[in-house]
Image (cartoon, rainbow, N blue to C red; front, side, top):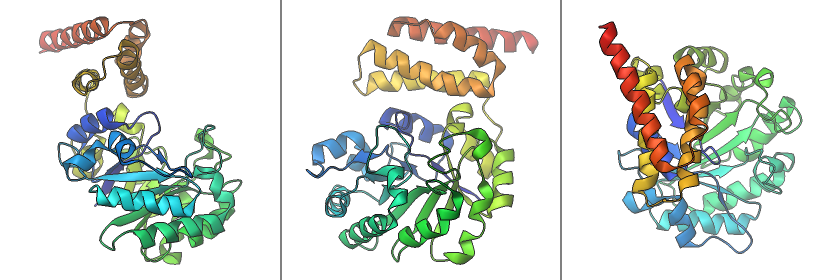
Length: 324
């Protein structure tokens, strides 16, 4: 019933992470992190760096289609960036009106206060793309208040837009747990029947996916940090697969560190920090990984990183063998 997407998480869903998570999860789509489009435009070299999938038919090595997400406030430059992505092999383009990062100024979710500018950007990008290139938009449920959502949808759900993903918090609410409100999505299906509404926000398990569907009537879901807590979450949600246990998640963590090495990223701090970052989210679904995280935080070298992970995997496997 469900289609499940990997969210374009800033600082998380970069090429190495996409390669690993897509390999395990069976996502229907993944997205690049947002790619900034300035008044100077976007160079092909920069686009290929952030979206290496373009050199593989627009897909990750396992075959997951990858949508290029762009962020900016200049309609003409955004249109040129979209056309460039298409020329390099993009299967789809996504426009970011949802990022609440403090480093994003007059773009991302800041434009939720300017529906006319959003309308112009979407129209320019659509006109720049061939009709067979999927165009989608990512927004939040408002800037100040969720009552703004219908007006925002009116601006972005234009002819030629296939999907609108809605993070079910306002820009002001950021990621506050108590602020999440899935219920705002249910009325949108009738108001905007030509687009698919994609639900986003705190979908971290089969149970939360089912609850989200009850409240939103959305069968297309976008998950972010839940993919770290349970690396095969889409298969759990969609196919009824057993969730990865802590041992399997540890092995995925090792793959993440190895992927950074394999892609030529050799700086010790980057690899160690990204392994710690993965574990910081993965531990939320496992008491055992929470304990391991306390020790792993002291890692400073790549050699130490792999040694600690391998030792933990062996200890875990030994315990399982003894229990059997």
